[in-house]
Image 1 (cartoon, rainbow, N blue to C red):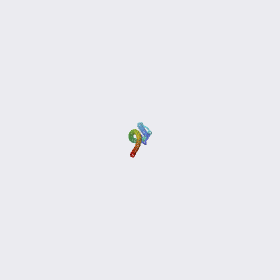
Image 2: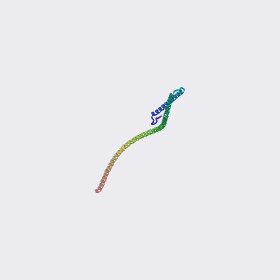
Image 3: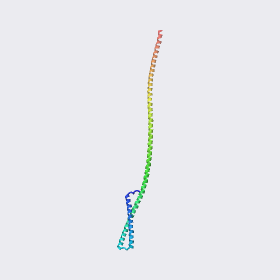
Amino acid sequence: MATPVGWAQGGSGSVCLAFDQLRDVIESQEELIHQLRNVMVLQDENFVSKEEFQAVEKQLAEEKAAHAKTKVLLAKEEEKLQFALGEVEVLSKQLEKEKLAFEKALSSVKSRALQESSKKDQLITKCNEIESHIIKQEDILNGKENEIKELQQVISQQKQIFRNHMSDFRIQKQQENYMAQVLDQKHKKASGTCQARSHQRPREK
């Protein structure tokens, strides 16, 4: 049983010890009274002097007074003991309530801790899944970037080939134009020579 607040363990032992000691004193006094009564009975049977009788009677009165005082002290100690036991009972009930409240709170904290731990594990799993997905997406993007670079190289090569073809085409076109101009000039020159000869022949007639 728990020790009451403000009532030390030594205090309980002292009260019980005093209570036991007083009970022992009362029992001793009652035994002495019984013995004195026996003595008085014997004195009745056997004649004793007045002085002895008065001494025994005085001792008996003193023992009775002491016995009455001891009973009063015992009643007070019993009252203290009952009060202390009442306090112990009240404090024990209060302690039991506090214990139950603590166990309930502890159970609630453990439950919340388990829930938080479960949420934490779920978040870690989700983060790992997202991280894995991001890594896959990065790999896909890197592959696409490599494809784009290869396509850009192909396009650049095609452009260069196209430029070369265009350059060759221009050169060829220029050559064709030049040849056409030369042939046209020759044709014109040949036509002019023929006309001149046709004008010269009638004069000779």
